Image (tube, rainbow over all chains, first blue to last red; front, side, top):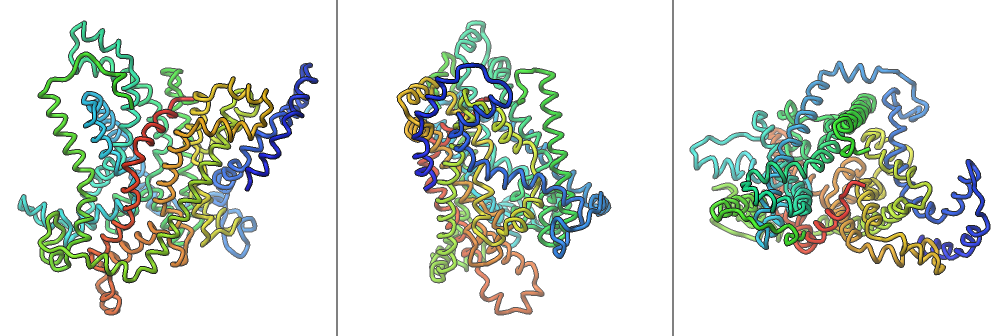
Length: 333
Length: 303
């Protein structure tokens, strides 16, 4: 419906053209701004609906972070509730969970980053050596998990880890004569399980980008290397890796920004929100959710969420400026 | 992906090739076997489940899980309908809105492109966080328990808009737009008649991505949906798995409610739920994945 209306509006093109012809003299400052505003009004009109969505989804919550400094109660409403300064943050820091959730969030993020990047690059290099129809088939299988929801992944993990009947306990461990493990209450295994599940889901899709990057490398480099007698391994280390390094750097910067964020589904659904596992599975996101929805404590959860956002923001800026210092070309902005 | 362009004179030795093939076959198996296991469990007879647990080769098969799933089909059909509706509407609106934002900021002659690109880019750097979003959605817009709360948060994915912008910039030559404008076409006509038809690959990719995002979303339902009749499929699946798990873990609670315990779906039923939930994605995925890879790598250039 919307397009039809604006499409008709778009037909008044003659006006713009005429205006363009008559005003050839230089405009500056506000006059230029107003002129541009009118001249490009249709382009601006185009991006307004998405802009509205961005404002509701992203900008209003950004300004909404002030609730972390308030003691929200439903009688006074969001704006009427009293300001309490940093009290919410004090509660957060005294709750004792802050160290645990920060360590888990940052620790897993870094572990995922390293494991996934190494595996993705390795798979990309290997697939590029194989090429052909089979390589494409492998790729099809490897990116399949990315398309499954975390709920489904939770079910898949449950099929393996279920204490009574799961595949590991009922069959697999028996082959090696190992006693069944009560997976959903033994926290020692979960760091490995989570890293494995995350890699299972995301490594394939991560490799796609590197495969494209490797495919784009000019063949002459390799031809020259062969003439010089370089082995496959040397070609990989001295040609392929250096040439895809910019992409690795950019993707690392992007993921650095989310070091304080965690995949909520992975940490909430895969361990089945099991309380016994909180010491190793509770991250900022699961904590914020639990405190908000289950304990209904807006103050503390918003304080945690704000801390997360601010730290994440600082981290992106720091990483980017570090990269800029090393190599300006590779910086994101 | 065009492998022929990167074909090299030197290839790896047959032995190394064999090793790589075997490793990839193992990796591919690792990717599909969990899915296969769940499908098999959903078809396993309850006696076999009790005796030997989940196996890849069960001693007794049965389709009873699916029969009981569809006997009480009201809930699941409703959840399916809700999910399909949300996915179709969400994807369509999302692709159009993102393209409408990406096109102006791809135009080099548009004077506000830097500003609006920044407006978009900044959302990738700083997030208000889930709590203030929850407050904005529930208090300011009163979206608790409404489907809008499931659609709105996923409509604009900034990174995808940047990919689209890069695609427009690199595929559609400015001269093409210029000449259409000289011929008297308005901005909207140029966009819908020239830019969009030339951008089908990226639109298809975004459509596929959107479908997956909307179909797989459950987090927003977890936050905003309270009424059981409004559960989309993924969220219903979450409840089926977690609530049963909760009851099994709390023997005391179960003992107080023998009725509840008797009606508890058994494990093959749970797994049938999972199969029904991932079915559409697994069916659609093989046909779309090539498109998806192409689009993903076309636009993913630093812009």
